[in-house]
Length: 221
Image: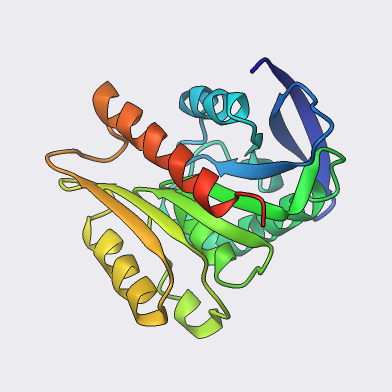
């Protein structure tokens, strides 16, 4: 399916925030939407093939440049601790913006996050009923959300067994939490893989799993 790329801008906290949109050529039908969040490095180049893959399968995909809110280029731990609540609000506002787009079905919105973006996606999904599913790459649920958690949605957990940046324990903790709450999830731990998945075979497998998971949980109600 041919796709169209464009850049959109919305406001959050009085700041202009960019979204890279990847949309299937219009069929007139309202589409399920996926908002994708980069990691602490701030780069989105590795996410573009994923966005194009999902858009070609009929999803409206938006890569969120949430660092625009704080003028951040890359984030270390103190920067993350300081800005996490602002980025959460930026994501909340992004969902509010995306759900008003004419081609989007507002009842079918998912988040797809990498690393820091996965933490943000999971944290948001614990308080925002508009999020129907999360695909999380090598992230986890922030412990602070234990106090604020109102709900959870289905999650696809993808993690490397030998991740030295975000230990695989985060994946198992999330699995435990979802099981305790009776929430559907899928999980793939890649043997020998580190943070960020170097291997193209792993990327392909993770891409196929992501697509199948999103098709299942964002299928027409």
